[in-house]
Amino acid sequence: MSIKWIQWVAMGALCLTAVSVSARTKTSYGEALSGVQSVRIAELLGSPDTYLGKTVRVEGLVEDVCPMRGCWIEILESQGRETIRFKVTDGVIVFPVEAKGQEVVAEGVLRKHEMSKERATSWLRHLADEKDEPFDPSSVTGPMVFYQIEGLGAELTQ
Image (cartoon, rainbow, N blue to C red):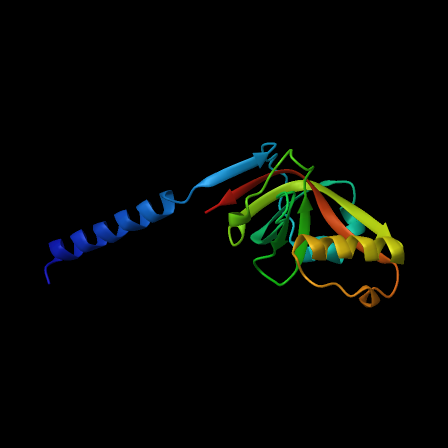
């Protein structure tokens, strides 16, 4: 093989790579991202008191989307199996169901939610209803604490 031919093949491969990378599109939702440093979801959930009430940035894959109003997404950390809910005000930001599986960078304020057993049962029933899934109230054995990010803005990449 001649050197010239190898150079042409290499140049073609480089061009194809550039086209496929540039073909990825970003869609912004809500406020523009501020540029705060990303924190791993595992770190966020491992020491939440450090981040409560602060603006945080997380990155990962959209694992689930609210099927009713698009008012939340569940973000799966790329490096692990941890997830966190990114909740936005109904109607202010609407995530399409097609966002599932897309890469996301999201910013918002970390909040702690504490619920009595009764409130947790009601909330979990609501989540099951949203997804048209069965719910067993006896699965709730006591009060519940969870963390979620009150969404400010996000960028989805497809």
